[in-house]
Image (cartoon, rainbow, N blue to C red):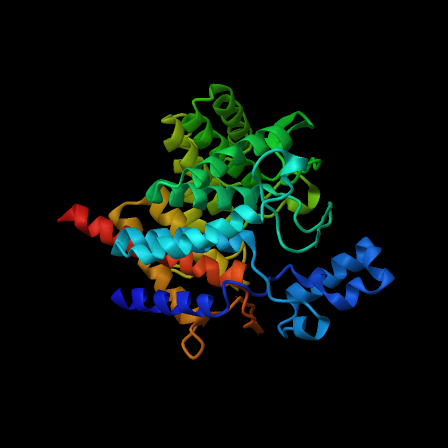
Length: 393
């Protein structure tokens, strides 16, 4: 699939043209129009306004005064993609570009005086059913993805400031997000919130376990293992997980299931344990059998194909290759990629579609949610395939 290398290079250039900035499904609260009114203080209006921006197939953001901006998680994904491309090509300019973006990430850390450690949040206010998160308040998912990218880049470039910041992020997770509530121990999504969500908690466990080993901090490792065991205990008999513990979290979707498995696999490799082998094997089997059509189309929910979402396809690439990794997983991954291109790629623009429902197509160009994920996942596939073929020769 050499054509995929060209497609991904074109996508990278599209991101470069926008200086790696763009719109986001959840950025509607950055609206200058809404913020100029007293309605902004109402949580119900914030939630409705955010959902309008997320669900509308027409991009209202230019009319509502929502600016294009960089997103720390999106930049982290791009950095990881550039590192993948460097490993495949050896082109040093890719690392130079990634290092410039990484320096931006260091400058965009959440308030170090307040949090004491490296951490990152979104560039927009965010209203959920359960809580409100102001722009810049750190969250576990953004912090983990940025930390992983900085570590990968710091190791290959020898930049210790990137490595130090990435490992310091685990201190933030352990200190500010470790939670004991309702008979559970877990890492919360944001500081001060007690909602238990499996993928967020498991990504925190994965990074704390990884960093704990690198820092030779066994207390951090043990905490991470205890947190991971909580989600392992709540895995259902068929290998699945619901999204979280609250009543409106009782759904099962593909890309969050993929997160769970990738995070557990990272933790397993980092601490060199076989404790989670059965859980991962059962979960991976359920994932492959449940969240794909026979032709490789990635489903969103366990009981529904729609919406088709590039995020589901992108995470599938990571899960199939990192958690699976066998020849048959690579072959199926290539079917998934082919379906992603057939269903979601727009050759006329060089960009990927956000979502398709049964009746509507949303073509809004989202940097973090869609294009950065597509670029990072395809760059990983290109690297994996090259290394797989080299090992097989």
